[in-house]
Length: 154
View: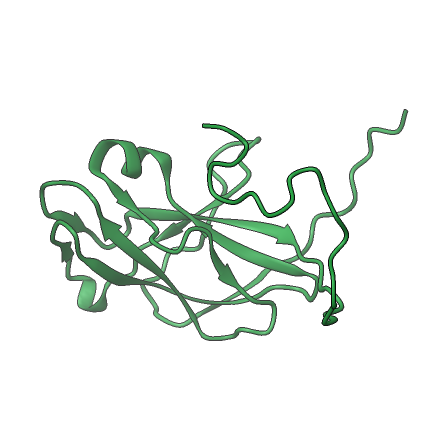
């Protein structure tokens, strides 16, 4: 059995704001690298309950073709404060070169303050398969058929 792993992809980050903090993995087994808030003039951003704010990171990224960046919530912020990513996972396409920003929603009951330098989300690099799209007059049948939401049980 071969335990070797393919070489990891190289993800290039271009600094947009001088005070930006480079994303980093926090442990040897971490699937996602932490994205860090880079607020304008280093001022905090307050997210009232039920509101969404876009938080800049200060970096643009170069993701190789065939991969995507998935922006996901940090579990501690989600469970302790109700702070999450409303479009989770948010996708960073391989051809996007603008600043990486994170949409955060406060599902908690208290305002949440995002400080400059705070780890706000995770970025997971994942493979992408592009499909060939064809219109079909009928679809291949399955046991489930057209059973939708909750049709396989709770």
